Length: 536
Image 1 (cartoon, helix red, strand yellow):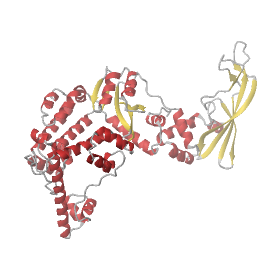
Image 2 (tube, one colour):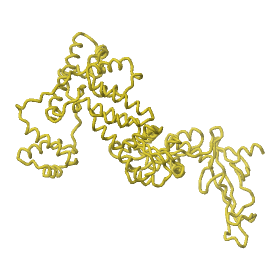
Image 3 (cartoon, helix red, strand yellow):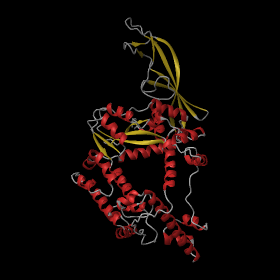
Image 4 (cartoon, one colour):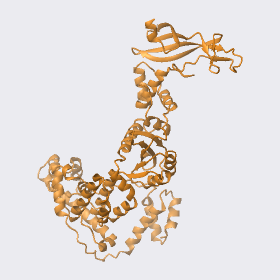
């Protein structure tokens, strides 16, 4: 009897026999109790109306499949006041109606499907002696899609976007920052969907978000009672981008001082100067690499001396002149794809943007009119520039070079070093910072501002923020952006919440999406991202 109890699929079932078929599958014959209880009136009945067999798949034994042949009865209810005439045995603790697996096996299927997905879960289930197809695993997972947490339990929520397809379609993820778990995944990134989600949860007290104005508007309209918190990481990254833009002249890679207003006004001349200096810089790099190669040095030795990657050095030395940057192949979304036709129209006097847009639209152009207008603006400015016009006299300092390698320090590297505290710098980075401070007054000013901003973020005191913003005369655009979102920035300083947990959950979502080859729909993504409530 003790052996038969171990094979029992659950309470209320008597094991009749156990057989081994084909030396692979165990078959457990069992039957329900010889008495039924009416689900309507609760009266017991011993009047059998009929019976039928259910075949259920159960947990394996030593890697071998176990199948249960369960005999269930249909009973008659003879209570006069009961409206039900017949009923069958219900065993919810063993299996749900119409299922082919026991509840304890369905729990394993859901758990493996939640953690591994369809095809990997199928391989593992077959190896463990529980053969289930990948479609069944995913269907079971979506059928038991865990509901989001109680709407009245969420106090602090983090909102961020994630991409279904980069630069094309985005969704929204909602994270309970207190429990550190995902509470919902929305199909789109819109004010309406985020606003509706927040309105359904009036107990939300804090909304943590990135610098996206879309979620700021959704939080204002959907949860006006909540305090908005700007993410500190994105604040520092926005400062870094502003510093990079300020230290580079229209995207040029050399560290430059702040230009005067008169110099900024002549944008066309500055672009021409930047392109010329960029060509000269590439020519200097090419001459240096050629000289080192002529001395008999190997690519690895040249890479060690100059700091460039070995593959880049090989590409430079395989040509007789500095190579131009590779450009992407043109497609109908670019007006340059129809440059020949546009140039002919321009030569014939057709220079009205809307007319040219209509003409190339009929020839397959899929881009916007504003993109076309930008190209026409360049052509118009080129006609207005006199070839003998002297360039404005702009004082530009020499680019700062790395003291170890001798090559120019780019604005990207300089901006990254500008926001990094002294204690986290390596010896190589420390020498670069010292060289930048000596060679660029702008870098010294920007680093002082960045270090003060880091101190304000960590001080939990927002009183010094207004004074710091007033000193941002060099990067006025970043200062104006901070003032528009000043309440959320101050809350980021004073409150401990941030969007780091949401960013981590997005990384997990990306891993799951790529593991499913990008074919998962919203229902399956939500089922795998939300926590699975299962019995231990």
